[in-house]
Image (tube, rainbow, N blue to C red):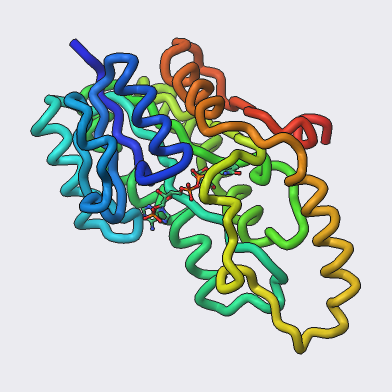
Length: 252
Ligand code: NDP
């Protein structure tokens, strides 16, 4: 019988490519996203269920899980992929921007994980793949909140892997480096910068240069990341971390 995987944030980037990869490998895929009505490609695949899930809305999480089980009989694995990066000067960030970064990247993962665990416990098996980042172990300027969120995700994932291993529920962490997706397309609006903070100008320039240097390295493709996610899902090991791309992170 085919295995079934639920993926969050499957509307674009790594989540979408991973959904396609697992489907091509014969898995049933519950490709979840905030706006499933806009999805055109994944809906064409017969072993893919495209459905709504906002990691900040519990009712949509419950519904997506129930719908997936109804369609495919069970869920074997979860990819907590939905996430984004709040860029810019920390001092210029609004309290809402600060809160939202954790609401999605940390509490969002916890919301989905907490909802699926009763199923995994009852079926006495399950796999949780959390998409962290190189920035979950190494910091970058102008990404303080993003780094903080992914560091939190790493701590949560590692502790959970210990907590659940006796129940045959495996937790793994994927750490992509810079990857070519919508993630890097930061709009002015999303970038926290306040021109009145003039004493930051020199710092911002220097930090910006360092930041540019880091992201100017060869970006991984979403396909490369999806291949590693697939390996993590199928290699049968209890390996905790999988690093993808970004040689700079590997050197540090
Ligand atoms: P994309 O921006 O292409 O995809 C992000 C996905 O997350 C989208 O599907 C987006 O949905 C979804 N999302 C955002 N907020 C929510 C929410 N509240 N509820 C549900 N879904 C949400 O970026 P990537 O594919 O690159 O990012 C995927 C993951 O990879 C993230 O966790 C990111 O931190 C991580 N990562 C990315 C790297 C990179 O350089 N690209 C490097 C390291 C890690 P919507 O379309 O509705 O906005």
